[in-house]
Image (cartoon, rainbow, N blue to C red; front, side):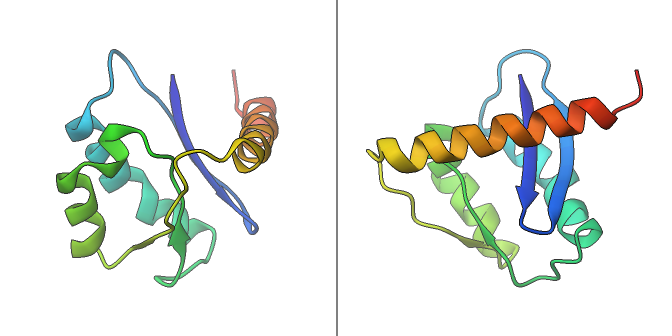
Amino acid sequence: MVWACFSSAGTGKMVKIDGKMDGAKYRTILEENLMESAKDLRLGRRFVFQQDNDPKHKAKSTMEWFKNKHIQVLEWPSQSPESNRESVERTENCCSQMLSIQPH
């Protein structure tokens, strides 16, 4: 499994996840990669983060992490097939591009 981020400004970091991801591991990945990606993409501190409704994404401790970091999180409808399909297609395209430029 991988965690990756992207924006209209380009692609951010991609992280290989070993083992099962729980809320603590998710927050560690965010801590170590999200803000650095935002900096690399020149997004500054004023960006909106989007994630799905996975329980570890919506956990109270995760939402508190975003609040403490002053990161705005986009509300995401729990059942949105069209939006999910577009997001998956964009993510797949982004990951393919990132993998094609990664040194082997």
